[in-house]
Image: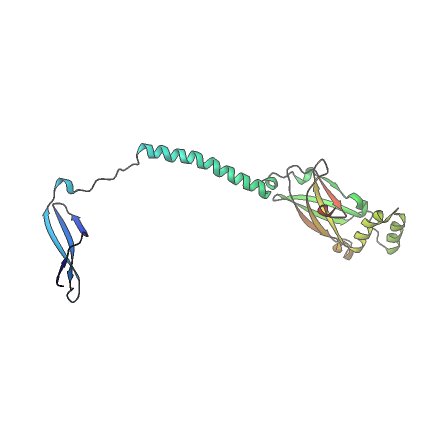
Length: 219
């Protein structure tokens, strides 16, 4: 059926002194090239044709609302960051006690081993070397083993002689293990000046570094 279909699609262009209003009309069937015919009329500019001016500044109540939102969100964000840092141990490491104030104990290893510790970015760099009582001959090792009263007493010397793994533990005043790292002693067997270096995570309430023959979690 031939005819036109009116639409509500309109376009209004506001100029300095006049207004152009365009109505888009569909024609059925569409002629070749287009099926929409724009109809435009131009009329003088009226007082109500100017669009409303947007305020240059937000309304006072919006400013107050934004300030209130910031006052609530910022403390919550700080709290969330602090809680995350505490749970991950980052805060504990940032406030870790200085390695200079830590007591260094070789524990059951006695004078077989020597310890050194330095602070490094929230961690402790611990160096293990041969101690003054480290035997240098097989006969000296055998003599030390004969002096042991039982197998538990022989274990530390055997671990050192064979270059096995021991544990470097960070403890508090009550002896509670706060962190620990395994240390393989093979380098001490291979060379008299050998050094074994490990990193132990720092803690605020740490007071000592202790060597142990076994892992704390497996006791």
